[in-house]
Length: 312
Image (cartoon, rainbow, N blue to C red):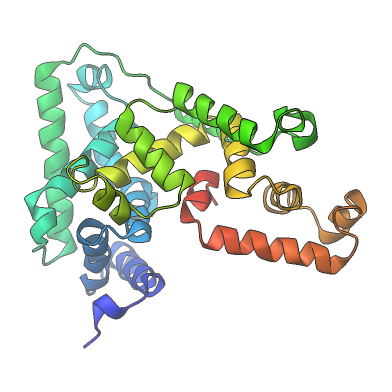
């Protein structure tokens, strides 16, 4: 029998995806153990990549047909109580709240689900309870909403990274540039002290969620660090200028070589020949360009949040 806890995450994801697709397309009932193990790692072990996978897949992946969270949320928002619910929360905030409630539940701590059907039924019950509570309260507070069209527009703007030579970095020192960036982030993206702690410890110091729980005992509820992290990813993606400066200054350590390769290879899909012709002083030889590309790949491989930020 396969020892699920010893399987690499990539293997779990492949098996889970294959089992789910066979069930949805061919109505073949497979073994739920792989998908359940992904949920267990995310909820009990606070495994960062497992959490990112289940959050993204089971929130929004349309290949799941009727069986994904956003579909259930929208069925409420377009229903009889939709106006009252929409006046209080956006789609994204409802999805985040559902995951937070799951992470903080006794069911997550004990994790006695035997099938994915049981687990998804529990998730749907959490949604129904939250929606009914919201409709009853008819919360008067209007929370900023965002449309899919706005998200697409901002996603396109992300791919226009400011030219480092003409930006603020050419006029101030690296330290001052980072301080200026952090002030912008604090003013425009951070809502409270807990969000700031998550941003500082995770996005700057690159500490895993389990370390944040250990550093700040009692401050975060189970699963809350992961929820806040996902919320901050969304806000960063909707602030393309701040995001591009964060990548250049924090992720790439203000390295001009890496910034050029990241911009033109990852975002613009330039060929090696184009880069060598355009930046001969940065890359005198092909070996210099290849070395920079290897550094970029290693950075991206070790930083799953960067892939999530860029929607790669």
